[in-house]
Image (cartoon, rainbow over all chains, first blue to last red; front, side, top):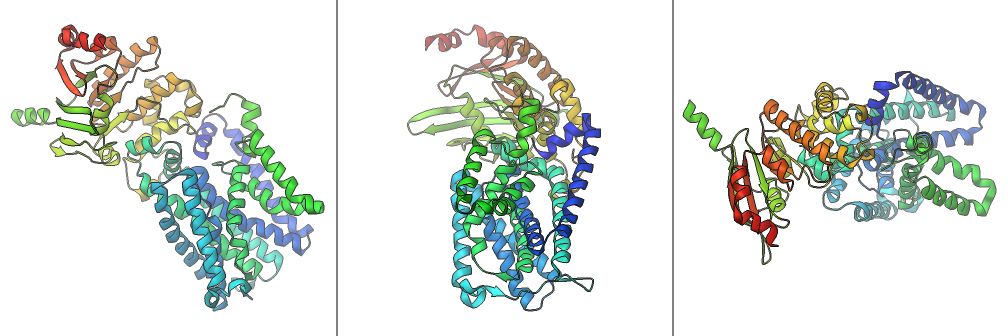
Length: 327
Length: 255
């Protein structure tokens, strides 16, 4: 069920439940914001990386989960954002200028990547976007003069906020968390607007959508562009977090992981990316004690999930509480 | 003024010598007919007689090989489904075509929201795009109130069929082409559906073209019926005349 369908159901019959849900979300957010006070700097770094990745997966959830456009290229936009930031921030350009520029560049490139989606769908589209990711990766690795090749770009400075330094791990975590919450709120507002309904219509039945005056060309391109812009923003924060940018994090394997995050959490569910990003960013850290067994266990868990919960973790309440909602 | 009105009436939808060939097979072989404003026209014919291909040629799903379609004096031949929708031409499909994950109410709002405002104004519009009341009225008319909040894909075939038809009428179209609205619908609902269409015809004032195999339904609903056989119009006229035509009977029973 989409956020729009949720909205109607909640608004009509379950307003108290909505309030409870909002309080629960607020508690989780505050708890997460305070969590690094108990953690060492690596833990805080992971929490920040979680926020950064969340921006990219929320964007991908719009493209894949809401608008139904397959994409295996999200890491490319993440990388474009990160490299723009690394180069521009080192050149002394303000973070607050770099951020919108990276978002706009990724938005435009995302629009262009949307064009194949007007002709091909599903696995064909997956390969088209995968090809784009590989291309971007090769440019990052081989264009040494601009990107530093495999040595990357180091010494990326962190921004300041109203004159306050964000060099400290905690300060930068809170800064990133605030930005992530703003981005998620903006996406929530977008998906609740009639645009969100048009994206869902495009996903569920493009032929029917077109016969009802929904411009599927425009919405397909926007789905890619908005998703890409989110990844671009995430990339800027990534560059400032790690302060060192090299091609590896933007390999298409990262796109696969982001897609996995969407599916694991529940494709097209508003809070799906939160669960999914825990799985791809934090779970590997928790499974570290297993050493060589880690990947096997991780793989098995994913296969099991796909078999028993194809709708993702957030489909559990529907499956067990309602039971009868079937497609 | 009355002459002008008559002219507009005659020139509402004009289908002229439309042909669609797939290789040597002539699916639609020179079909012409008119539909007046507010009129309900039935299209009957045995399976494979080219009814749906004719619809798809009019509706931009396929481009006709030759011939023309004029709507309100404008040549609309070969326009995309999107352009036709914007001109007030709606349709329903033979198979189920609803937005399965959206609630029934959202299906109805989705069906009309793009007809108002601009992309920008829709982004800033309230979630129901100001269409909540219209959607609820349509839900009441189609008696879908008890399932309004449920995902359309979780409902029965008959209910989804009703949603599909209700969606086509949400934007208040000037012309609606309905492809087998009764297919797979239980007999009790068929009569209800006919009454709904009569009501919508009166309240909205649009013209309907209805493909249907259910003879009883079409004879009661449509004052004018066209019978197609092998891609051609065999005969047309008032339902009784068409029904009693021996060639129509032969076409249905002959093969």
